[in-house]
Length: 415
Ligand SMILES: Cc1ncc(COP(=O)(O)O)c(C=O)c1O
Ligand SMILES: N[C@@H](CCCC[NH3+])C(=O)O
Image 1 (cartoon, rainbow, N blue to C red):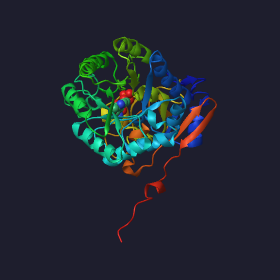
Image 2 (image 1 turned 120 degrees about the vertical axis):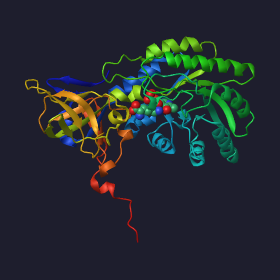
Image 3 (image 1 turned 90 degrees about the vertical axis):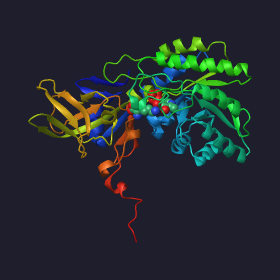
């Protein structure tokens, strides 16, 4: 559910006309809805309300400072994967103690930065990282709180590029290795064992693989408890999918109703790391039709947003809904490929879409709030889209458009 609705013949973002926002701020333009972000965060928070818990929003989904700030004000924790994401969380007013640091390649510098900030937990993904972290922390005279990210070897049944819980994936350590590493961790000078974690993939449309992963983790939790190694929390990761087309998704309440009974009686605080399910439906990418090109085999609707603004369609062959901001209900539709101006045949946002459009019209790609702007690049020396947050009757420009001059700043010629 989102707060972008078609009414009075035009698309609205909360109470505002998307066409008016695009006229005022230009295109391509990301528009986020504060109400949607808040509703989705609360859905997780309320689903887990019966137990001690923390919802760590996965910053990689949408790291705009205003987005992070909206969530920080609600008391969210944050899942980060780099020093850059940590800086953003702190700048946005996030609480470092509610930060979990994931990722397979944390540098010593990032570990130091996170220890200085006082992050709540490092989700450690290898033996090498565990030793490095212990050394970095011990050199500072502190202990790093850790969870091992286990790779439970379950098939999340999602796109292979975003599946993370199979043996063949680079993430985490196997259950057998985790058992050995927890024993090692218990004796390392710079480590304090806090929990156990897993994250098996993204855009999951069924929670059965998540529950399967959980059962495997719990068997390990019980074995370790028998050996005297106890955890304060269990981090079940993120991954719940959103509806791009007609997918049936698992709602947070339903997922929690399956999850919590399995955890009962162990006294573990429940942590999770949702990204897409919070930000996905909270954003649109608005773009203007620059040109219509009728070809012999294909018709092209050439818009001013491109793969550098939104790479999901071409990277994952992801279907994303493209709607007309002011539908022309009385005109005949044609079938178009919606493409951008970038010099790649792979530069497309949608294929074979029925549109009744004219040059100058506005289109909106829906469900673009997660992994949209955060995956944008400057390819073809294109500036990045502006970002806007709508909040009821008001709109706030939360990141200005990058113009051509921004793109050459900071570079130098040879002497
Ligand atoms: C460690 C970790 N946590 C959380 C997430 C967020 O996933 P999603 O956006 O699917 O909820 C990801 C991305 O898949 C991740 O790698
Ligand atoms: N970028 C991916 C999700 C990656 C999840 C990160 N581990 C997508 O758009 O679907």
